[in-house]
Image (cartoon, rainbow, N blue to C red; front, top):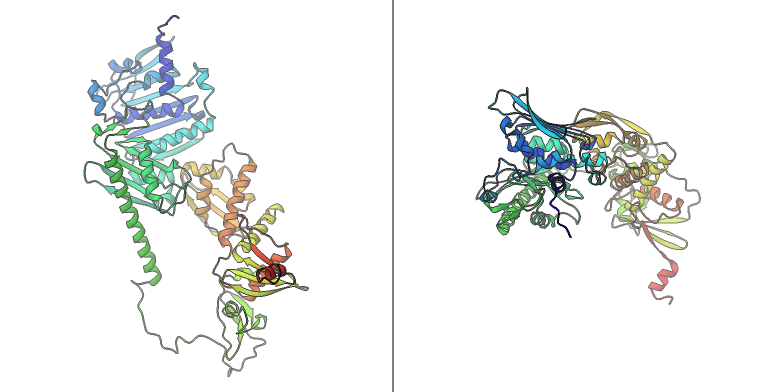
Amino acid sequence: MIINILDSTVYNRISAGEVIENPSSVVKELLDNCIDAGATSISIKTKDGGLSYIEISDNGSGIPKSELSKTILPHATSKLNKAEDLFYISTLGFRGEALASISEVSDFEIRTRNNKDTNGCFLHKINDTYIVEDYPKESGTTVLVKNLFFNTPARYKFLGTKASEENNIKKILTQYILANPNISFIWETENGYIFRSNGQGLNESIVTVYGNNIFDKLIPIEDTEGKIKISGYISSPEIYKNNRNFQTIIINGRCISEIGISGVLNNLYSKYLMKHCFPIVILNILIPFEEVDVNVHPTKKEVRLSNTKQVYGKLYNTLNYFLERHLEDKQKASLNSFLNIESTQFTPISSEQHKPSMIDYQDDIDISKETISLSSSQVSLEDLPIVEKNALFSSDLINNNCIVSDQENILVDNSTYNNISNNKLLTNIDKKYTILGQIFSTYIVVSNLESVFFIDQHALHERILYDNYLADLKNNSVNSQYLLIPEIINCSYEQKKNIISISAILAYYGFIIEDFGQLSFRVIAVPSSLKDYLNLSNLFEQLYEFNFYNKKIDAIDSLLSERFALLACKAAVKAGDKFSYEQLNYLVEYFFKEGLPSKCPHGRPSYISFSKIDLEKLFKRKL
């Protein structure tokens, strides 16, 4: 066996494969250099997801002409002088591998001017040899990378699609914008601007990346005591994601992945979130440099901490303190709002003032013709059923828009769910069932000649709304209602791009949207059948997480159907809601007409039934 000493070109390309995995790796390494050079403004331009073109410019200190040719030599760096420096690394880059690796696998150029020089310089390749020439330029550095991996086809063929590589760059830039809130970042692709942060602080950076809707639900964190300092934001339990992509952990300015810190977050939120639900986190942790080892991973994504227990303990206690304080404040605010403690002046009310409105027998009123207003609806008294006060299941019916046949005629207003009775009731010429009543304000009890049914009012009404909406879709008859005042939805550029890309599909579902600036769009029309139940911000928040690019129409259609099933769930009447006879009758009519629908759109049972024989077996009448 002969041992060969590899040519520098070969081993440099092998080394490049460890440092540069894809276009986002190039962007990351170049951004590190920009930040280490003291830049306050960084511009990124990419084409084809960075596969064909990456250009990054900064206004940092620049590189002296005498040093420029060294930048592409392996292990050449201005950030370390001796081995001991590895134990006190304060810069993002330190190995001196990045530019050498990038220059081996791409067409590579550097234009720069040191802030102490009067002229700039230009490093580029001619006949496979890099040369340095004078070049007019303002202070700072511009690095151009074209045709990445053109000479390493084995690496190139394992890259993702242009869209997926662009998404990887987006993830990197998201972290760098959040980790460096005082630096301005501009990212432009062949399709326009993606990010434009002004470097005006963390609040502005979060809004740039995630939008106002998320920022408004974040809890500020700050603990500057001791040698471990923690600041940033965590999300209230009411908002969460189904992955950790919205968690940015920054240690000494470096975005890292640290399994122990992820464990702290899991433990903290386990009391508030279900499994596979993750909070939104932007945490900046400052630890003495000598207690952090960053030289453990080729891409510097991982670190080792010398005092893990101390870091984890302080992190948990700090986050727990601010989270619990936020929840307590929220609970107090909710209670104060309910009781109106601070603003309400309690004034005694006389019994005469408090007397409920009722029909006076001595009034000269023709009851057969009189109508009384029930909130927004007008219901004729002769249409309301007479219910005996001591009927078997009378308690719920008595307390709902019904007249009680007793010593008094009292009208109780409970029109919260008039939307049910306002629907056109089905004809009931040959009714073969009897509505016995409503129990626990949750279940409707109905009997026919053969069985008794316990119907879950929420599950059934949810099925009605969902079926009616899908029927409209199937018949291409979804009616859109234009909003008097269009609702503006603030979001990140990427989220808006996602939604705009499916505007035609949303229109099919009854939602009409328009582009409305760089970080927002507006909804001008919604499905008329769902207009009363829509929380548009919440709906689009769910849609943001789905990447619609390169997805088949069926997949998008399936996702939207799931979301509208959730809308039907939210719109449906709830357990604990009391109904009038007409409302009960509407639900039961549908139940029998549609052949006893057994499940709600989510698969929960809509009813259970007992036949006469089942009951006889329960009572041991039959064995």
